[in-house]
Length: 109
Image (cartoon, rainbow, N blue to C red; front, top):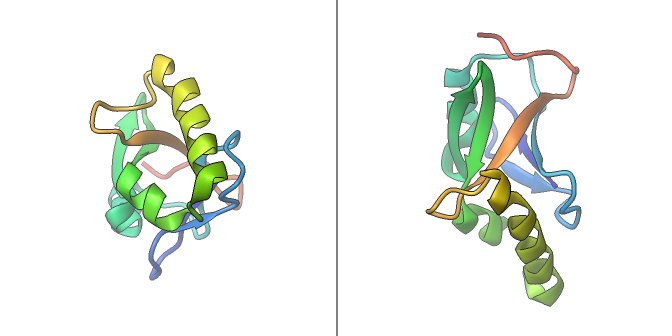
């Protein structure tokens, strides 16, 4: 599952049925955390951890963007169960996603 961020567009969910590859894909030039925050919008909040950006994706946004249905609910429950003991789920339900760039580059700090 990818949260796709690109300049000038709203965040969108891609590959929604893949619960084993949860991450952010930036489909634009490398940028700093401020630019990522602007692109993320309602999807969640950017936090830098050990110098790397992560997006805390809200469950409300994920559920609104996903296809819904029993399979979606079961897949999300499994993903959350995997992520929670690793510290990748906040008490408010937001799920942490690492950030990758489409060009394979590192973030600009």
